[in-house]
Structures are given as structure tokens and as C-alpha cells.
Image (cartoon, rainbow, N blue to C red; front, side):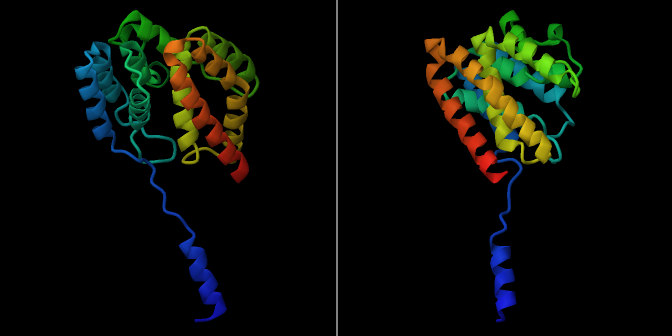
Length: 218
């Protein structure tokens, strides 16, 4: 075998095959619903089916992965950290429904507290000229509610994990800088409640690890 052929083979061996979705969304749906039944989380049970129907046909950016994978993955993430508050898991499942599915808060089949969380993590469309101003107001509202801050941190953790699927280098850079600007305040809001202190430390580790990986790769 020639040196050129050998080098080509070595390069091919270093090319990784990646999976767009680690978990099957239907399995995650079953896990969330089973947990919700066991803990009598009535809003979560209603939110699962509502979210699946609302996001039907949608896909994650530049992928064939059904969009519902995202909120279900977030719900599983929260449950695995011991978060069993019905309004939080329900809000996680519905967090993109108002923003992306032409639904109103009044249509959400959940309690007022869950609706409030969904509205806080929903933001208006932005453009290059007004984005910073809009996002400043947006994050200020979320910081005022530790449960909304928790939902947003789980959302950002999941988006950081998967942003290499469908974001340009410029968009990844913006995601990193936005995260560094706002997320310490969100984490501080979560840590202000002893109830979610453990989750806050786990999320901080996960978010900072992802930021470090992307910055080094870029």
C-alpha cells in the first residue's frame, strides 16, 4: 500500500458519523407520560398530547428530526434532575407552542402558572437592528421568575447541544455570546430558590462545558 493510499485511509477513519437525535421521541413521550401518571401531573399529561399535535410536521433546523424531540428531550432532562413540579414540566413541553405554532396562551390546556412561564420564555421576532434591545427586555422578564429561568436554562442547554445541526458559524457565535451575556443571571435566579439549587449547578456545568467545547472548535 502506498503512503498516499494509507494517509487517505487514515483520514477516512477519522470521519465520525453523527446521529441527529440520540433518543426516539416516541419513547421519550412514553417516559414523560408514565412519570406524569405516577406523580399525578395532570397538566403535564395534557401538555404532552397538545405539544405533539401542535408541532406535527415541524422539523429541527436542517434535519429530518421531528421538532417534538426538542421539548420532550427537555422534559426528560428536567425529570432526570428530579424536577417533578407539574407546571414546570408542562411549560417545558409547551414552551415553543405560542412562538412557533400559532397558538395563544388561552388555548394551552394548563394552569395559569404554567401559562405564565410559557409566555415569559416566548419572545417576539427580532432583526439585526433591535435584537439586543428585545433580548434585554426578554431576559429581564425571565429572571423575575425562577421557574421560567429554569425552563430557559434547560432550553438553552439542549439548543447548545444540538446547534451544530442547523446553525451557521455566525449563528453559533451569536448563540455563544448571548449565552455568556445572560445565563449567569438566569442561573443566579434559579439558585435563589433552594428547591432548584442542585439543578442549577448541573445546568451550569453542562452549559459551560458546551460553551468551552464550541469555542475551542471554532
